Structure formats: structure tokens, C-alpha cells
Amino acid sequence: MTAQIDPDYLERGYSVVNTTLENRLRRLRRKFLALFDTAATSNGLAPISDDSGVRALYDSEHRDLWVGVYDQLPFLPDVMGLSNSREILAIVRRYGIRWPALAGVGTAVLANMPFDEPFLYVPHQDITYNSGSLNSVTVWIPLQDVPDNIGPLEVVPESHRLGIVEAPRWLSRRHSTEADLAESKFAKRYKDEDYIKLPIQLGQSLVFSQFLVHRSGRNVSERVRFTLQYRFRDLASTEYARRNFSLENFTEESGARFSENA
Figure 1 (cartoon, rainbow, N blue to C red):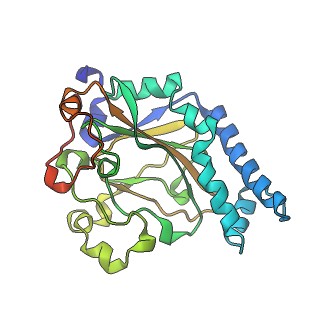
Figure 2 (figure 1 turned 30 degrees about the vertical axis):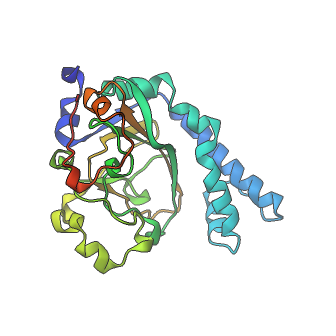
């Protein structure tokens, strides 16, 4: 029922949620490093035991090996299986998802590298890339503490209530000039001071409406910021069922707006 949904979430569009997954996430991060190590040593390169080794591989002439590992991370059973864990499903139900189904690509893993400005995500709303029910949520889970210097997610509180702004042609700054970004509808509606950082700790997660405007934070630390993203839509939504559970992406012209229990 709507009354059970965190009222702060309904107002702001996001909540920080404590979990008991800290040890499981810590082990998963170690598994990521082990996979980078396997790729490096299998190709005659120096072993990788920590973040500095992952960074060295990324900055080397062998970045293709780094990319090869990165592309496999979402498919690890530990990553895919977490979306079906009792705790994650309980969390999304607490935020209004009555019949959870993964949206779009379902599972995503991001590795935000230090000082890697071109690959930061520009302001966007997940709903324009993972169309589903109007109460769809994203569960954003870090594999390490995320203090200010490692690039916490930056969001515009209450922006989920204002409908769709636009879907940027490119999500990464790599494809956009500063002039492109300055002329975007996001930049015209929201200034830098409208965004707030959401630093969180290992074992916590962010749950936010897929209508919430957000962007990447800058990683100015020495660590890699690994995060998991699970995007859920609600198959119990009457409004969504009337659209035949369409997977067609919403546009600004659709007039789609956040609803906690459509």
C-alpha cells in the first residue's frame, strides 16, 4: 500500500537504505579484482592484487584486457543472483514495487575510474532508458564506502515529480562537448547548485525513482568506485498492464510522470 512507502522517498525521490549485505559485497569486490588479475597474468602482465593494479591496467596499452573483464562483470552469478535475493526484493517491495521484474538490461556494473572525467554520466533519468511502470525504481549498491572524494551519486531532490526532461543522446561526457551540455534541457532547468551528493557506506544502498534526475560524481580518489545497479519495474501496475507491459522508451512528449502506485 502507498501508506507503507517511506514518505521522505515520495517527497525527495530517493532513500538511503541499510542492508545486511556488507560482507557479501566485500567478497564480490575481491572477486572483481581476482578476475582482473586472471586477465593480466594470463597475458604475461604483472599480478593485480588491489585497486592500483586495476588502474595500471586501465592506463596501459592493454586497456582492452580491462574492458574485457569489465564487460563480463554483470554476468557473474554473484551479481545477477543478488537481484533475486530476499533482502533486495524486500527493499523494492517496501518502495512500492509489488511484482518485481528487472527493467531494461536489468543488471549493470559500473567502475568509475579515478580522474576519468570523459566517462562520467551526464544528467539523465533512468526511465527514458528502462521504460516500464511509472513507479519503477533503481537500487544503486556500492562495493566500497562512497565518501565525497570517490564520486557519490549526485541527484536533484524532488525532480522525480516533474515528469520527463529529455533523454540525452549520449550518456557519457565522452560524446558531449561543454557547449552540448550547456544547451541541454537539463542544464537549462537545473544548475550545479541544485544537485546534492549522496555519500553512503558499504552495506547501504540508494533506492530512487527512475524519474529522478541524477548524474555521476567525480572520482578524485585513488580507488576504483565499483557499483551495482538493479532497475525494477512493477508488473502489478494496472497502468502498465494497460500499456501491454510496453518496453518502448518514454519520451518527453509522452507526458509520463511518476506515480507511487499506479
